[in-house]
Image (tube, rainbow, N blue to C red; front, top):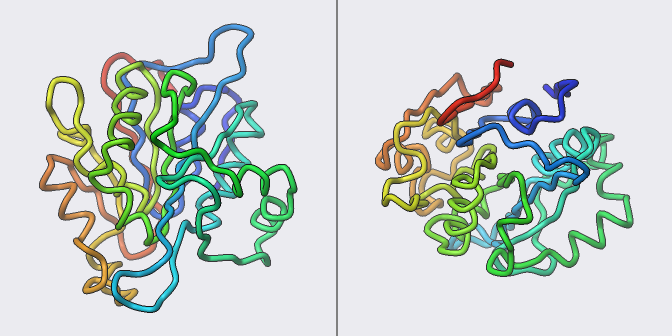
Length: 242
């Protein structure tokens, strides 16, 4: 379900653009400075192969196209990044979905997708929020990525929003804050469950079970029945009433 709130606060917009699960965390409510267009960084996987199999993977298109539409319609700019830069591999290329089709057939978006910046080159100060799209490829190049960890912690500790959906939460594995604690510690999350991984027959392909790893690092997993929608928002500090 896609819901666009009337306010332009990212704390209201990002949690509403979710498929299977999302965590959104912020130290304070982050609004763009007066006269400045807010910017959100979408991070996509660069990994194109499912483990040792010959199966293709990548970022899941609808987990990029639908949030993109909501965020852009709310007046924010979106940039794209990936671990390796350039053109990331796509999965779930369903152009019968009209939102997917509009996104995919937009030349300006294709130009950005074909030339994503490397996460290592990102200046975290340029962004009000960071969003990690899912797709199984994330399980190989998002976890324990030092550049992802650096940018994510910097945006969070500057009062920005950290958001992710489905396997995009792999980006939060091993992310630590400046005090040495895990970003996810003590926070409620919703993530692709062990049962869902078994249902899609990838529990023995992925390098680890994502829900278990995040729980090991202190996250409070809030699962629902397989493939049902779930939104979890975790805040630290004062947040205006929704």
